[in-house]
Length: 172
Image (cartoon, rainbow, N blue to C red):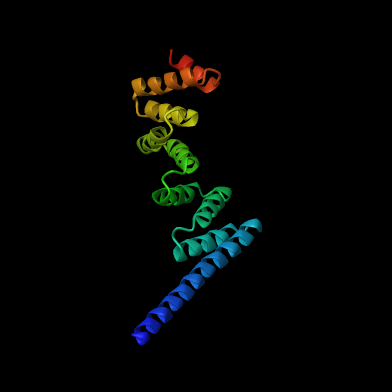
């Protein structure tokens, strides 16, 4: 019985050491990535952030830095892909969902953008940027009634936000 207890204890200690080295490896790659990013070595930084994420897929700071590095280096499509992966883990990160929706609009992918803005509005029904983005995506999809409805909701909720007033005036 004591032998079995000793074996279980040693296995737990070993597993704990492996987990610690696992986290340390991800942290080391992240730290090196931050240094490379600071030095404007964007390719190296993105490689290191991806390595940190490969070691620990739920390392949110590494994922956010990877997105930032891609954006700073002009790699918007890579940033969009990284945001999509991050949102699979943390669907509640509205700022990335918003940015992804805006990027999809720029890429003339209104259906995918509409899905992002719909998710934002599901969580925050009166999010001004979400309403405006939803309206823009609906307009690109020629869903004029849905676009007008979102703009009206925005205008009623945010009467001083010129985006809603101007967009509604443009529609008339």
